[in-house]
Each structure stands twice: as C-alpha cells, then as structure tokens.
Figure (cartoon, rainbow over the protein chains, first blue to last red):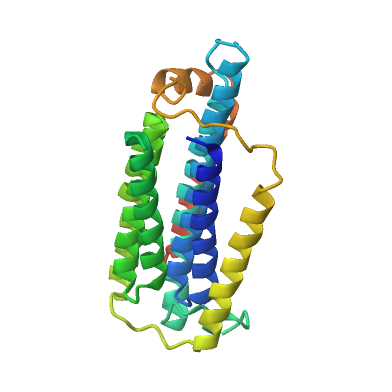
Length: 112
Length: 166
C-alpha cells in the first residue's frame, strides 16, 4: 500500500480534529478532538515504521528490527495520553464544580 | 483491486465518517460512541499493517479505558442532553474553512516530499508482534519505560489533588 494513502488519511483525521477544536464549545468534546489528533499521528507513525522496514528489506538488510522504534513511540504516546486524560478530566470536573458548565467561553477571562 | 485495497478503503471510510459524526453530533454521549467507532477503524488499520500489539493496546487502552472515563464524566455531570448553546453559524463556517485550508496545505506540501513512491508493507513483517517489540522495549527503551511509571504516579496524584473537594 503506498505510503501516500496513509499520509492523506492521517491528514484528514487530524484536520477533522482541528475543525472540532475550532468549532465546538463543550470542553469534553474539545478534549476528545485532541485524542483524535493524537490517534491520527499514531496511525502515521505506524505506517512510517512499516515503510522504514520495507526500505531496510529492499537494502537486503534482513536483521528484521528496522522500524521497531516507531511502534514503540506509539506505545509511549498512548502512555502519555492516558496520563493526560486522567489529569484533564479532573480539571474539567473541577471547572464544572466551580462554574456549573463545561462551556469554554465562560473561561476566556481566566477568572470567575 | 485486491482484498487489501478494499479493506483499506472501507476502514478509511469508516474512520473519516465516524470522526465527522463525532465532531458534528450534538449529544456528547453520541460523540463518545462515534469516537470509539473511529478507534476501532484505526485498530483495523493497525491489524492491516501487521501491528497486532498496537491494535490490541489501542482497543484496550483507548476504546476500553479512556472512552469509558469520558462516558463516566459525561454521565456524572449529567451532560447527556443537547444543552450546548448556539454558536454563530459564521464561526462554524470559518472553523470548517480553516480546517479545510490546513488539509489543503498539508496535502499540497506532500507533493514535493521525498516519500513519493515509498511503500508501507502490509500484511507481512514481524516488527509489530509482541516478541520483537518487547525485546526492544526492555533493552533499548527500558529507561523511558520506567520513567513512564513515574509519570503515571504523578498523574494519579495530580488527578486526586485536583479532583478532591475543597
């Protein structure tokens, strides 16, 4: 499968995430759009790791571990995303307790 | 047009359609469910790329744990109704145009890139299996792996400190 297809698919998913961040006002949905952008990047990293493996095979380097790094980066991105979600949802719950809404437009003055 | 291209097209269509529905649906619970559908489609792409470990981890961690956390928060705060105030239509159109321009610029930048003609191997290669990934993770990347446990500990402490009642 040509790498260009995967790049365009990841760009499309990332752009949909950007549109969601720009147009929605619910803080939870903005957070979910950020998760979508992270997943688009993950998909691109996995595709690039397989591309790297293919290039190593073409160069007759049959050691077989070329491209493992990209998939481990995806693993670490998932680790960081899980930690980020736990802290971010705690912040959203605290925000809901203070201003009784999750609308980000109530927060644009950074005070309450 | 072989079976792999058909699978790629179907999975891509599911992923993009679910992502669009996630952005446009009014009810936050529906958004979470559409995002889970997107994650399953991306996991299908991982399986197609023979990255089975990441496919399973994506389903367990994202669709299983993170999205259930989102659902818990939405239902605890009783947000599962269409309560979002109306935003001006022009702002939505401007956001869509800005995102479309970003996509256009990225795809146009792809035209001159060096990856043209490169191929991502599908359905073969064993670098995505647990054996090779685990060997690499516990030899070369063992220090970041241990540091990530400290990151989880600090995230746990931070979530408890932020979330506790005054």
